[in-house]
Length: 304
Length: 156
Image (cartoon, rainbow over all chains, first blue to last red; front, side, top):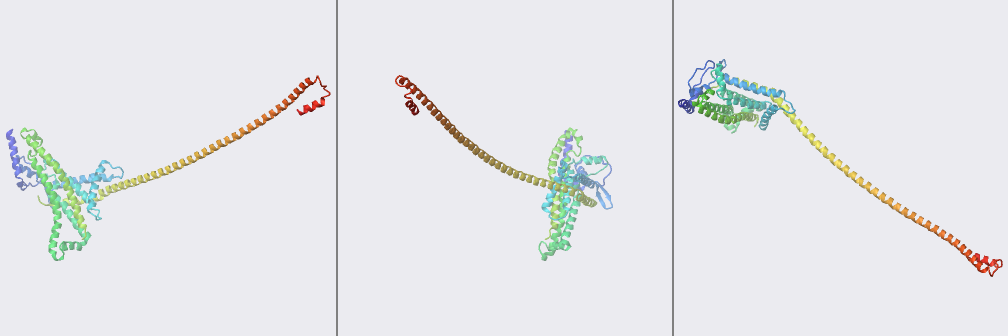
């Protein structure tokens, strides 16, 4: 009994100190039987960090990210559409009050920052806030729950947190970037926007320097937006995985083995603490993404 | 961990979701919220107006009550003066009546007295004569002294 405890603990500790090497060993493909494997923290984490990929004419697609992102988008649209359809100006039901609370919160943020007339900004902010939150929320599900279920159905790799996928966060931030460009050109005109890029902040004499500065500034917007969300969620997911190394997805089975019971308890306590902390992060990141989108778009509307 | 076609799919999904929420979600819920806000502010305004009307009515009622009180006081005053007037006149009437009754009784008593005096005088005369007769019947002939006696009787 004592020996099996040490057998489990040792790789846990090794894994804790060797996270840096993990992502190198990514798996490829998606479907097929999972090979029965000995416990290895490195393998466990790299397995969890591998996407379920398929090849398409456009290139590789992470279908797990796409699936969960679309699932969350549909959930968002379904719930909000249901309440939007029967929204009445009478006494609202509790559900309607909740939806209205979110909408009014977003509306307040938009009105505080953005003074243009576009009808797109507010629904865009709402979508970002709720959708990003829902995608982040997937992080709070036990790390092994859905991947294990997937394995039983013959899916080798599965990552359930879409916002911990760089493609998804950049998909959002690049779209926002395109909107920034669109509104910059629409409000200031091509010449106005070009003038702003070339002549600010240091005047006409410093044109190339201005241009360089401005272009970097603009490009930094989508990159920082996308990387911030990705980084937070990826790190959060990784920490959940590290905590999960204690039992390495054994879950309930391990509870029967008294030798690793302390590990299971340790995992539970650490997981609980991190989940509570992460709860704040996922909400905050959704809010920050929304807020920065509003700020960037209202900056695009400002004519100097 | 690299950018690939997932990015394009995510952008497409994002665009569709935003368009859907812009067309079918945001306007509906915003409309309901704004309408309710309008209803609430209308209701509050109506309540305020009602309050104002109530206080107006209260001041009106107070004025009416004050006026009524004043009227009641004047009526009471008038009634009092009228009552005291009636009592006064009744008193004076009573007094004059009493005086009249007294004077009438006085007069009647006076008449009675004089009547009685007359009777007494006559009786005294008769008595005197009869006394004198009795005295004189012995010395004086009635017939002889008749003239003198009559004269005396008349004088009495």
